[in-house]
Amino acid sequence: MFIYLQDQPRPDAAGRVGEPVRAAGADGAGGEGGGVRVRGGEPGGEEPAAAPVQPGPKKIPVLIHDGKPVCESLIIVEYIDEVWDKKPHLLPADPYLRAQARFWADFVDKKVYDCGTRLWKLKGEEQAEAKKEMIEILKLLAAELGDKTYFGGDAFGFVDVALVPFTSWFYSYETCAGFSVEAECPEIVAWAKRCMERESVKKTLYDPEKVYEFVCFLKKRYGVE
Image 1 (spheres, one colour):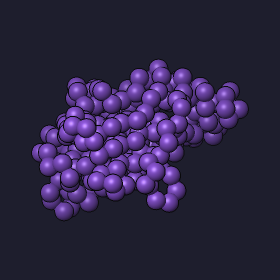
Image 2: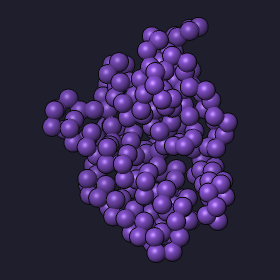
Image 3: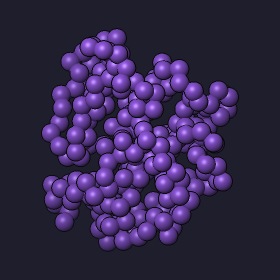
């Protein structure tokens, strides 16, 4: 099995795939031709080629399992959760709880990335509006987290995988928009620190300073300096 992890344009996508792969032990499985091969690098680095068997538009990350491609990061995460029967599973067995986990993961996917992009890409009143929206998003997520250790309860779960790569971007968001995630939403920062205690998370997430360098590169590229 092969996993191709692309660092552009969404490092969060590569990060959320890498964590469950490492947690499941799949990245060390098998001998020659087996296990997982990860292609990636620093944010903004050279773009690796997508797998040649991938149908349709080239999307990365892409997982190749027995010659068959699986695309889109959250779909890959769910696939890994089902194929590698490692417990506890990322998605709960209860149908309602599974639906809730999918809802919040989709919320993260649609809201956090878009709003975060506007934090570094916009200026003035538009940036201030994006900052207000990001704080509201994080507060909603903190309310969903409540007093649980993880979004999935006592076990690291699907929503945690969806959100945790964005913690590497917090420094960039704060620096570009002039606010503190910890001051506005300490529950999310405390949760992020708990996540970082997991070896699979620690090995997967990008250095916030490297992410900021990448953001500075993007700002110059798009002429928003």
